[in-house]
Image (spheres, rainbow, N blue to C red):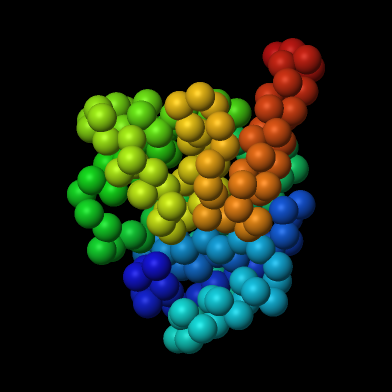
Length: 180
């Protein structure tokens, strides 16, 4: 997670899946870590010792969007990202990932196709495994060809991925049942 070297501040948000740690540079989010508070704070402190725990305007916006997401009110993150050091391929894959709609899953192969690289499903999997912004760039929505849940870099891994997918499905169903 090279972006953490750029982090100037971080903030922790309590959520139903544990703490979401948000780290930012002066221009955008550089990292999201998920898990227990001590683990997240420890990892951010260890990997970004120059960063302060401070609610900057960018981190306040990010925290508000994360809170809205878990309240069922937010379905899309609109935040600047600062992701230097990624390959052009990784940037294309993450840009395609950002377009995957709420409560919709795509396979690694479908995401590869959307990124302009048909047949690169395994390479897409590698990008997902190193996604610096899980939840914000929704890699939990990427599943195996047969719909199998495989790997997740946030929180408790596949258990967190399953929880997020179930949460989104329930929220989408509730909105559908409530009507326009």
